[in-house]
Length: 563
Image 1 (cartoon, rainbow, N blue to C red):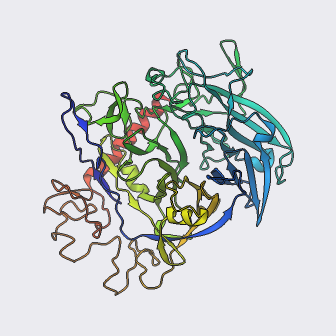
Image 2: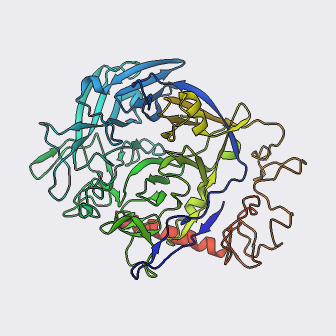
Image 3: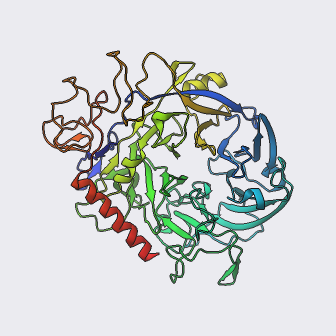
């Protein structure tokens, strides 16, 4: 586990602390962890050009059938049953689906109810042009509307069938002032068991609906609008009236703003620019990846009632979107505002747009267990951070973030990048964007999808016999490294003098480059951070870490008290 303290690089700009574009968040490191990537399935082309198939979400059916559902933004929802791909439902054939070159249109997401095997319920999000149907949600302040973002419920007559026959009802229709950052990811918390009050609650990720791009930041940071908010509803709950409008779903009583005058009870957390992906670790920890504006990409740990700052914060920086949304600033010494900050972040020297992921708990890649695996949509880089480090970084200190690492790829044993794979598959050597997404099956195994070539691929263990430094087969908490001097144990401290000064005074990860106390892997006063060839010794409990946990529990109690 490694956590880094943020090194701010600032300049004076009209008396302010504007941060230089560049190495704002510290480097992404490569410590040698590699996986094999293999082709799994290619979706049918829905365009003669590129992207070939706009693959967006992949989920396994929660009914024990081992079927995998996957959608294409242009309308199709497919189901893979064994080795046969079926067209389950084509939204473009039954709905006035708005599909445009814009990235914020089409069939954005779907989620299968945890009781799908018995009730046949599937939820979808899509966009439509402004028409005759009246939205039931929208901006707090009057503005011209560009499109509608729609949440639907579909009930299959036969949940086991591979072609949909059934009914549809509309739950939410949001009036959007832009095509950007509308409703997107929808998901159920898979860790909740039947009988729990949170069972069957649907989380709805979205962003600012383009408010900043439309120069309307005043639409955000408010509780009377869904703009910038992560919602949670009970799709099977009791309908309710708000004003003269009937809402055909329920608001969970445990939602943080339920019953608060003037607030929308659907809001679970807010302050997001583009809450692109949601996922839960096995202990119920909710991670949300938020795509940044011009400088910083975020991994957030989210709890009920949180305010994640947009458009006043981007990453662990301040931002003044009214003046220039491409410039970020160092935070004031005493930040008076109750924002929650990312637990991991990277800047645009390293990538362009975060592709949210999952904490890996599968069996195929032992060295990856306990890591939150994510990536960059455009470049196709696959990244990871230690899940425990992400939780430890949630310590009320904006600059404390978990170290991010690059996950190397091999194809038939040879090093490769995802971008190179996509270029080869498309025959287009000039393609510069992969459109990376992630999926997870019921066994916890990882898939990556790429829109440009329409492929689904699997991540597998790297089985190279020459140097097995990625694996911990004996389960002792250290990766196994053979006698080959070129193979480094990626978790244990090397005796090589280039790697350390021989001391680790605070016994946290990382040796002390400067001979003083290290700050969870970064030598205090040493801007280099950890040598990528030298990774610190296993984390041990310290008073500082215990204090972090105590602060986290106080926050949890505070949130639940408020909820």
